[in-house]
Length: 154
Image 1: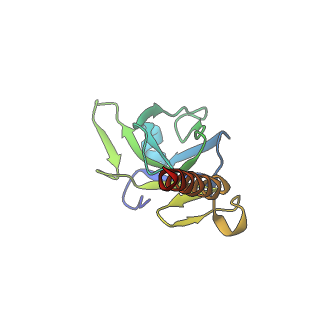
Image 2 (image 1 turned 30 degrees about the horizontal axis):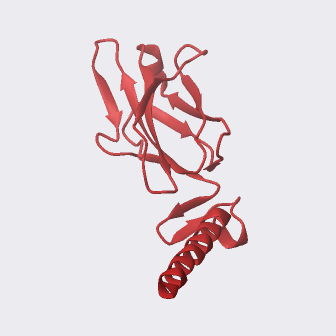
């Protein structure tokens, strides 16, 4: 995510996420923002290997150091492909700024993801394919063949 020209000094997330395993997001503000009472929230959205994205979830981050470092955790659901996110800075005057202004600026890929005919991640077997998809396809083809043979016999 491009944070140049913002009050955000750094955003830290893992390079990959795992199904059902909690991970941290840490946002570090510059000293001016920390001193003027700026708070941080994020909105995240989990997208599944099926291609469906779940509803976005807004969430406040917390700071234990006077407002410089903000942190929270989230746990991706089973069979997720990636987690999208954007950051919102809230100011004392009631205004806010979201980065990016529209869409999603950050993404944490799953350690076993599927996007169309492409897959990857460090936890996928045999070059990235998901084992359940192969079995499902095989069972489906065998089922269709059995129906076709039965219809031919009638």
